[in-house]
Amino acid sequence: MSYLISRAGQTYGPYTLEDLQRYVASGNILLTDLAKSDEMPDWVQVAQILNPTAPPPPGYGPPPVSPYDPQGVVAAYPDPPNLNWVLYLVLAICTCGVFALIWEFVQVLWMKRIEPATKAFPYFLVYILLSFVNGGVSFGSAIARHGDYTHTSPLAGLTGIAAFVLAILYRFAMRDSLERHYNSAEPIGLRLGPIMTFFFGSLYFQYHFNKINDVKQGLRYRAGMQ
Image 1 (cartoon, rainbow, N blue to C red):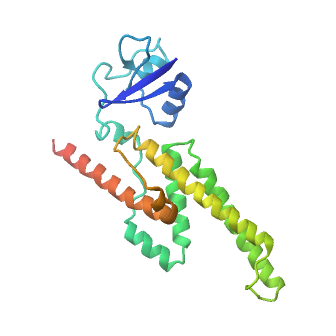
Image 2: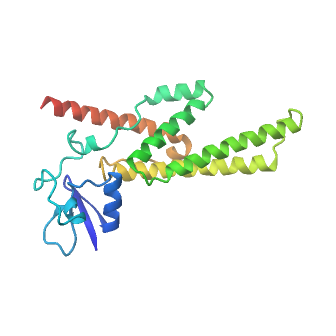
Image 3: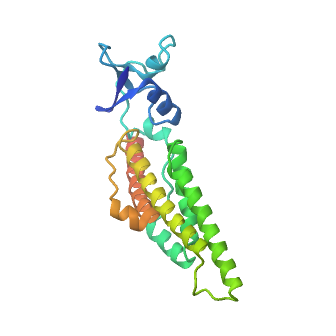
């Protein structure tokens, strides 16, 4: 049996029961979201689907909260890493890319908190490992040639290509996870271009993180004024 999920007037799915259990565990679906199968006459909360004998959670009955209600969905998910993308670029240039690697790790750790099953995390770890291996092989080859860095060993070339491929896989896995989250759990209609993702990766993601954080902070401020 498959179920549709409704939140803030938008419908998602269909999802199997196993999908619901997995997404509830990861936080992408809330127990207070509404669910309905073809065989069900009415919408009920997800909590009633997963455990029909349990009493409904507090607030049973009213429609689900807005995806940017600070007391609702927004509070359930940590904000994206908050660093101005221009400052990120400056620090990456000044540190010859070292800061970029560190901040990429911060971004992918945050993504894993949002979506524990994201493929971006293992791809990133393998990419970093292969980068270190490539650097070590290249350095060792240069020492063997008495400091000659003009010739690359076959192993260094292979590890370099493998690291490049994993970097691309990581970027597009991150893109997929971000679009999935911000079009379902926090539906803001996020769209990330493949060309910008390919060439700019974490800098491009940080630019959108800044915009997402601005939207969230503005809505929190307006809610506090009410």
